[in-house]
Image 1 (tube, one colour):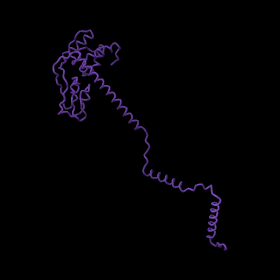
Image 2 (image 1 turned 30 degrees about the vertical axis):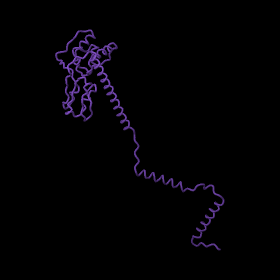
Image 3 (image 1 turned 45 degrees about the vertical axis):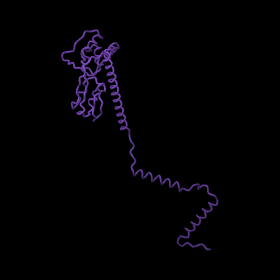
Image 4 (image 1 turned 180 degrees about the horizontal axis):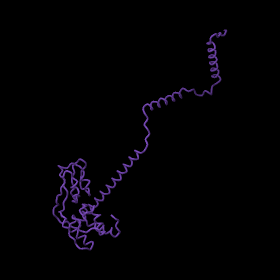
Length: 254
């Protein structure tokens, strides 16, 4: 949808304030605000909202300064109603939860669902997706609420709808970020884990280095004269022993 001019956007806000905020799509648009924008832009007529009834058409005509235009012959007007779930048939598929534009259904996957009647706008969007036909519409008691009461209910429904849209967009962003993190982690090279044999060899080499360091003589360059004399005497005896061990060697005279 093209962006509205400032005047058209302000007019769309005023039109949207009159619409019932069921977000049902019966007008041919995806919600009340898109329909309001289409009216403000001269692209849609004022008699396309069955939930708003003839009173809604009159309010729009008064706002826009145009004549009243009745619904077309193909429009079937129904009394205000709320959805009802037969809890004995519900299988907990969550399809109605996903369809409800104002979060008026309570439940979880594979758990029984129920309609929060005080929040239901009667949009009927939960009925077609149900695979077991356990959702029906119950007419509300006949009454003629004041314009102020209708506006208050519409405003509350609008806020719930906006909150749902924001939550849905936030969930999409979070899912996309989690997917991106997984892709980055998968693309990052991972060092090959050390095998058991490699670990054993590395530990053995480390122990050998530690043992060599423990038995290595220290301070061999700082011998006293007495220690040096002992070493020289030992070396001399070793040399004489080698000499006597040779064949034909003559023992020294006493």
